[in-house]
Image 1 (cartoon, rainbow, N blue to C red):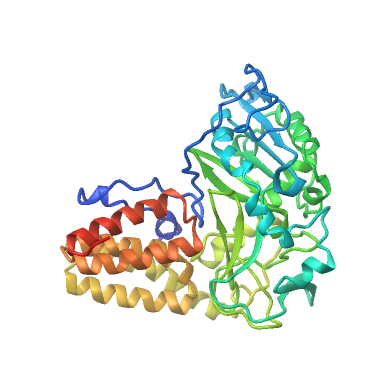
Image 2: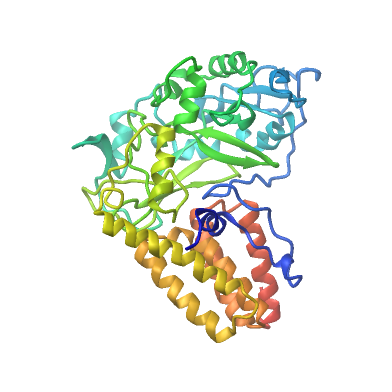
Length: 435
């Protein structure tokens, strides 16, 4: 029996070729199912409350001076600032609570108005999409028996098509969003208020669902309930994307579960080059079919998923979570088997012939469990295992496939994809191919 920790290792680990000392350095491990690592060269100055705020500077996206604090109430010595751009995303605005260095790394993406303009039919102004906007979308929001409102396809959506696009309303460092058992900095309350006041369209942010009770700031409640995990310059953050939130009036109100063919049919892709979140179809979606995504790490067993749902105060009613106990148990056993098979592949005593057989068995389970989205991660490992045994052709095959899945479902401009491109180029050289 393999532990949940082992399953998480498969889910989240990046295995650079540098470990085998045969290929180029790769990125650090991603910390989310869609590893969001901003890797653009930052042209913006690093600003804080000690820096004169420039009134006219083409490399500064912020529309007001930063408000900075040091959360000494929790013993921190790091400076964090609220940065706001009221013009971002067609005037919807963005507030960022983070370090000056991370804020500077986002500057070029925030300054570029083109991505938001091209996705303007997805944007919900003041929490509402117009009839004209809705006519351009491939889905509609309708009542779902037993679930409230849900998102249903209005036309055929081919696999890998983009269903939704959203840009963040807020990005907040996890220093201000600690686990429930840890103390939150008291300085956060004032910072959250300033972040909200800096938005050009507060209603878009406030229209998201809340799930917390007690003495908690509305910003913290909304971010904890709806945000996606981000990772930038070594810091963990949460980004709130209203159009793909849990309970946005015109958004995806979804059961977000374990990514089986009977459940989730789409996946959120973060792009570090424009900070956008795109929802990608993982398979063909038919008219009238409910569109769902996953909130929890993919490939995890039932008990882990059910514990995770407590963060959002809802009970998942997808086909897998509501299946008969024997069906769920069989699925859990297959997912644990994936970890066993992967461990055998890592064993240096496993022969090349055995490796090929293990990969075949592994891939069959991935198909059965509907975990194709994770092939970018899985195939990166297979690439390494073949290279370690001197099979450069096999390594190149899986490297190219890993890159294809990574560019589709993960950040195509992030460190994971960049490392894979380097490895594929190296492997082409080893096999005598050009490019």
